[in-house]
Image 1 (cartoon, helix red, strand yellow):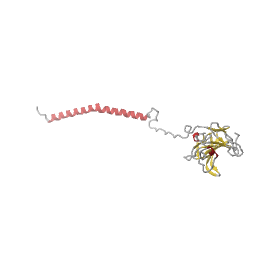
Image 2 (tube, one colour):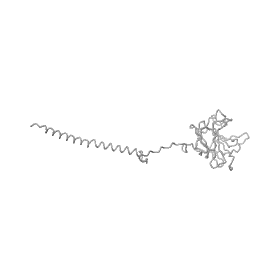
Image 3 (cartoon, helix red, strand yellow):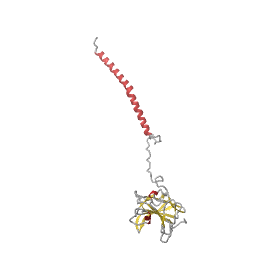
Image 4 (cartoon, helix red, strand yellow):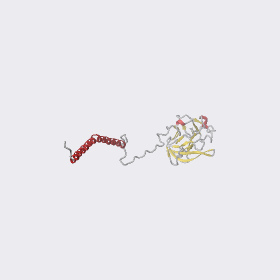
Length: 253
């Protein structure tokens, strides 16, 4: 065989390199390109999932942030079951604590002029205490519950006063006075309570809902006084006291 010249050798090497490039391109088209296409499809599916929330629910438009979900407060879905405790005319009084927390219920005279007797509801077990004159007044009621128990408003209405609760002349917690809705001549006083863990108490003018609005929690008064309700409980007799009184002005109940 006649030896190849340098020019012929260079020409054959160029042809071989071109053939190798064509072979590499064919490998890219048959192997790498399909893999890239699959990767692109997977990325598109993932993006579509996150943009749609994964459940098909409507999402904010592109570039908008979703509004934060407001925290759930005390509402009808979290408050205890509304249990009627007593009635007096148009005033309906419900248990101020969850029924499962009640240790005893004791009706008694409020011991103040203008107090309004309540008719105890038949659905709640209770006792009635007579005063020294033998009058089984029911204008006040002690609802026994352990210290620290959450206290809810016993009526629908508006807070008209928040004052110190006094026992033997000493301030012991708070008393919240509420004017029942639709009965401006009556006042419901809730005492033997203190602010809850957050330290917040209803302000004057605050609208409250029976069995829904938190007023505070039961104050531990076991060292401050001895309560008659302790005769019916197995503890120190801590309780929420609810009194129904008459306002000094306004039409009769």
